[in-house]
Length: 225
Image (cartoon, rainbow, N blue to C red; front, top):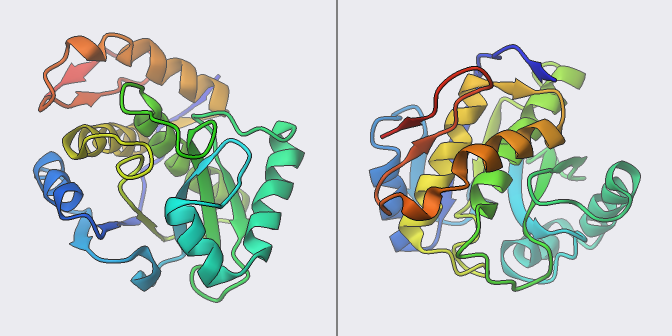
C-alpha cells in the first residue's frame, strides 16, 4: 500500500569532503536548485537531522558512522541498535532506516540507513545507494507524520562513495533518484519502497553512467533524464 504524494517543505543539504562527489552532485542536481550542495564535513551542518550510511547491524565502526559516533558519543550507537532490534528484529535491511534522538541540541535526530549489510562491503555494483537514500527520506516522512514539523532540515553525505566504493557519478545519480522519489511519493512501509525501486532499476546496468533514472510512483511510467 502506498500513500498519496506528500509535498516536502524540507531543506536538504548535500555535503562531503570528497571533491569528486561534490562535483558529481552539482552535475546530477543541476536542475534541482533547492538542494544545497557544498564541500565540507557533515559535523558542520546545523540541521534537524543528519543521515548516516550504516550497515545492517548499526555498528558505527567505520566511515561517516565512526565520525558521528565520536562526535555524539557511544550512546548513539546503542540507540540506533535498540531501534533496529525493536523495529527490524536486529537486522536493518538495505532500503529501510531508523530515526533516533541524537542526544544533542543539533542535530535533534540521526537517521541511519544501510548502504551495505556488513562493514566495508563493496556495493559499487548494487542499487544500494538509491535504496538507502530513498529510505532516509522515507524516514523523514515517517518522523514528520509522527511529530509534524520535527524535521525541517536534513544533511546527507555521499552514500557508499567511500567505504562502499561506489563511483562518484553513480553515487550522485542514484541519490538524485532517491531524492526525487521523496518529492513524488510517500510509502506506507519500507517493503513497498524497496519493491518499487528494485522493480524499476533492475535494468540499470544497461543505462549510461551519466543518465539519471526517476522512479515512477505506482501507476506511472518511469522517466529517464
